[in-house]
Image 1 (cartoon, rainbow, N blue to C red):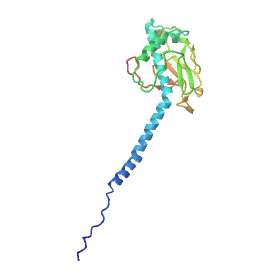
Image 2 (cartoon, one colour):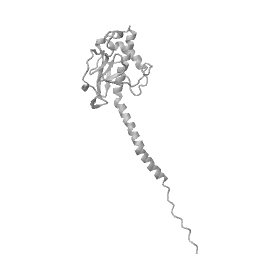
Image 3 (spheres, rainbow, N blue to C red):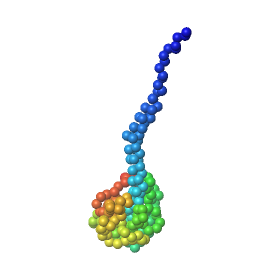
Image 4 (cartoon, rainbow, N blue to C red):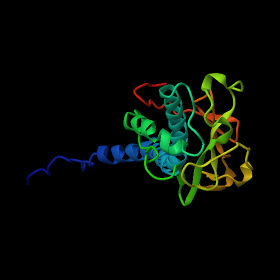
Length: 210
């Protein structure tokens, strides 16, 4: 009678794959998911803010174009009646050489100038009290040169008057949060919201990075 074979316990299948799967799952929940949510929030913010940021870029760039026009015309600012037509070639050149605009498009050269945020369209106006004046002779260097208005039409100009910020466009589509009307002062390329906070996106225009 043969002796029974030696006892060999059943070998357990390695659990390495299961352990790796659990670890990866924990890492995804702890690290990957928040990262994805952060990236998603960033994409949402960029998409919602495109119109607003493009709007501020337009005001800042047109301000530079107005100054370039004056420098090319004996230091005199354009006249209120034709300011947009006069400045258009200078804006076109600046727009064509803009750097670091990322996903944000600058305002088209042709057409009436202004901003479009979602379904809301506003206009850009020139301060008529500066019409035809020499830059060097304007004493109040904090005078508003360009400002946002509710309507849009060609060569829009009028004396500057602060508008009610409560009636300004919503900030990034949030109806309960109004951003304030945009303005650019004579000696400042940065855009102000509601006449206070400045907006500067470090955009290089005309080959010069700020």
